[in-house]
Each structure stands twice: as C-alpha cells, then as structure tokens.
Image (cartoon, rainbow, N blue to C red; front, top):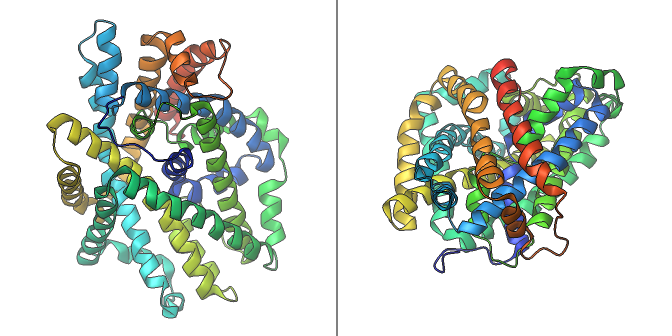
Length: 438
C-alpha cells in the first residue's frame, strides 16, 4: 500500500464509513415495501442467504482488492491485470468511476430534496401543508431546485475536502450512531400508534407461498446485492484506505449485518406508522416525501418526530453520497495527480452543472436513474469479481483477505468466490436487464 495514502484511523471508523455507504435511501423506501410485498418474514430467508453468502463475499473482495493495491478502481485493476500481462487495467477501472460519477449526479439531486425537507421540518408550519403530493412536485421548481442542489454539494464538498480521517471517518462516527438512535426512537413511537399492529403483521407474518415464486428470490437477490453497495467502486476505494492489520472478513460481516439491521429498522418505523393511518405503503420517493409527512401530520407529537425522521434520512443520504463522490474524487486525483481539495471542487462543480437538468425535471431524473441502476451498475460488481476472484490467483486473493484476520477464511471459500459469486453477479446483470429488479 502506498506510504502516502490516506487511511482510516480505526477499524470501527472504517466499518461505520462502510455502513454509511451501504445504508442509503434504498433502505428507507424500497426494502420495507419489498419485505411486505414478497412474503413478510419469509422474504428474509432468501434475503439473508444472499446477503451473507454473496454480499459478504463481495465485500471481502472489494475491501481486499483496495487494500492490496492501495488504489481505487483504475489503479487497482491496472495493478492486477499488469501482473498477468494485460495492459487495459486502467481502461477497465475507468468504467466504475464513470458510472459512479453518474450516480453522484442523480444522488446529489435526491439528497438535495432531503436537505430541503430537513430545513422545512424545523418549522412547525411544515405539517400544515394541505397536499404533500403537490408539495413534492414543488421540488422541481427551477430556482429552488438549483439552490438546494448547490447547498447539498457544498455540504458534501466541505466534508470530503477534510480528507479520510477528519472528513469521511469523522462525520460517519457521528451520524451513523445518531441514525441508529433515531431509528430506535422512531420504532418505539410507531409501535405505540393505534392500529400499528396491522403494519407489524403485514411485515412479519410469513407468507411461505411466496418462496415458491421465482420473483421473490429475484427481488431478494437484487435487494441483497445492491444493499451492501457492491459495484466495484466505493468499497474498493474505502478498502484502499485500510491498514494491513484490519480484519477484512470481520469488517465485511459487520458491514452487511449493520446494513441489514438498518433496513429492518426502517421497515419497522415506516410500515406500522403508515398502516396506523390507513395510507398506502407505496415504494419509491413518495413513501418518504409524501406518505410519511401525511403520517406525521396526523400523529400526536408529529412535529418532533417529523424532524427526527428527516434528519435520519439526511444522515443516510449524506453518508452514501460521500462514499459515491469519493470514488470520483479519488479517480480524479489518481488520473491527474491533483490535490484533494482541488479534485473535490472540480467534481462537485461538474456534478452541480450536470445535475441541473435532472433537478428541474423528474422525468429526466427517473430516466437516468433507471438506466444507470438497471443496466450499468451491476456490471461494475462483475468486473471487480472477475479481476480479484478470477484474474488474480484465487489463493493469493484469499491470503490477502486473511491478512490481519482473527478467523481467516479457509480454502472452502475459494470456489464460493470464484464461481458462485461471479455466477450470481452475472445472474443479477441478466435479471436487471430482463426484469428490471434490483
């Protein structure tokens, strides 16, 4: 690993940063809906199977690839492929960086919505709005949308400009515990609402017949795969900031576990509250920005809980956006040998300019989100798996992952990584393109 490479100070700081990367808006508006729609507690069987078999394996690979090379995707792929006589590693590694830049653009727009809602939720009059659906449409009014996008990118830019230890690790050590505390308080509040029991029944009563349907397993696979942020980008970069004594298998297990807990907690907050007031628990942005404000509007103490909820959503959005944008910043520094602060300023400025057409038009935003998430993102995880589990000798990969591990993985792990992970990754690509699940 490069001697001058920035690094995480502690393993817990690294884990919290990775949990922050994985715990995003998808945990809040997609997982609760899928859990209810595809068998309730029964859905957890394929979901947890895929999280711990595929997700943890992928995380070990991306952390290990980053730590072994001390570089982001471009440098990491180049390092591995050159050892095998291939000279196109940097070109291959450019793919996840470009895809992540596209994600940075649209995720900044969505995070800007959250920043605006947090600001509005500070004032009690926020819950007096007669129609939150109409208010959501106001997000796309030109001038306010551009201003809030700028505010969002300024916040992220200031954090990333402080570097790995003071910026990424420092902020995640604060907001991740705070997020879980908010979720815990909100779970208690939701559980005490009259009629909340129907929501818990909807979520947790198992419908075993759903396990006989291929769509249930496809949904569980897609949710598990992307829930832990596998795309050959953010986790490779975060892995490149690791010291040699960091326990990669343990860190991978904890990342997947905390992400799963956050997803379940979000479901236990949102669905019982929605059922308590007889509101449709639809998936997607309206669940957070339209449905939940309506819930708080009718809830005793709604002003306080509305504020807490949107602050928690902001923590989830910021932690994910930081990791996404850091990939692009790292790639810019690597390619052009520029300083961190200059690279952050350039990336944030480009994201702002290119994000304006998406910030003012929901149709444009939906189009690029679908195109990137359905057709482009899954390929990044396949590339990372092929590079580290197939092109790099698998025994060398296992040895690298085991460095610093208290409980190293054995040879049994090699076929799981080389064949099952890569095979399932390709399956996710096919499912995404054919059925648009994930």
